[in-house]
Image 1: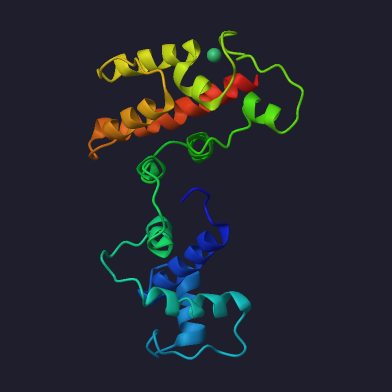
Image 2 (image 1 turned 90 degrees about the vertical axis):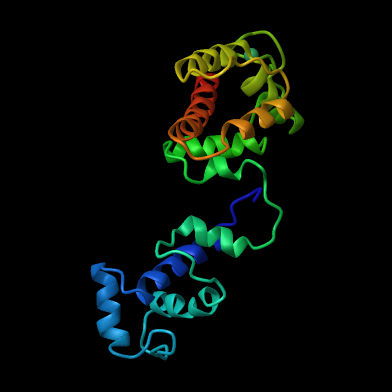
Length: 215
Ligand SMILES: [Zn+2]
């Protein structure tokens, strides 16, 4: 999952709606579709009405996709359906940071771009032909790359030292992206409260560093 596939994600949203329909989720408009289009017929075999809107048709067509996904839990989220639809595609090791993270959505998007090295840091802008000062604006001490901004920069390290002291975890002493990533993966093992807090902190910290860099 190096880029969220928007078509697949939209398909997921449709599939989730279908799932709610199949399980008669107690939402007003889903009850309306049930009474208007489906009535007493079994949902899996109900014909698709010719007069149905394109949206209802798309939702009913999602039966084909969802029949391939075994029902493991009563609760189906768009995220879990998305992962099922991704199938056997190579999975990035940091995917657990993206899902089940209670940080604000915009901070998760920043973190997601950061993890893939897709943020427009100065080195990337220069590689696209822009004539810019590539020095780090936060510490004035090093070229601004993803690895510098989020791992080596003294500004970022100072934030992490305080955050780690706050949750009483060992100090932050890393100096390369690979070891930084390994460090993250070690920290997000399990699902206890401190792990959840760390995931939230990581997204919020990445976002805060990026916003500060853009000031
Ligand atoms: Zn710096």
